[in-house]
Length: 250
Image (cartoon, rainbow, N blue to C red):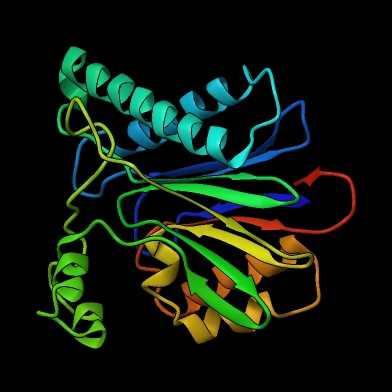
């Protein structure tokens, strides 16, 4: 496997509130993370950095190879602990009151990917020339689409599309979506913030993921196109490719 994390402030925001990473453990598994600090809230960048740093700290303490069952349990428990850490920090620091962050995280092995989601950052798998969104957006608009009250096209232009129904750090407990899928050799796993998906269509993203080039070039090209399309938000990407080489992280 090989993995990479890239982030860009975009063209309109004064600073970057996103965080993320790709990190190998001692057993050849990768943890990929993307977190988007909540816009319009104080210290969104603090929340996303705390989510990243806390996840990595727990990951570095791994003492065994994770099976799919153990990976799902690990993500459920770890994301809940991270949520509590952020929530307590906000209570103890008035300047951080109301802060929060999305978080998508994925445990990657040669056989499977186990992923978790809180918020509206997303996990995709690109396989057999198809791009499949693996997570559901925990947003007001996402709920309206799932209930049939909005079409996807209407949702894309809804004035309240950024209102989240779930985020880390805003409550003492959090519901975490977790699932496991198998993946194939040459498949790509994409974790990203809405700074990418609000600017590019699925077809735009597929056009870049289908290019036979290195992960760094793919990420750079995705970010460049998102900026060329408006760059209205911070843009962050964790990208992992399933291959037979040794683990490589950029």
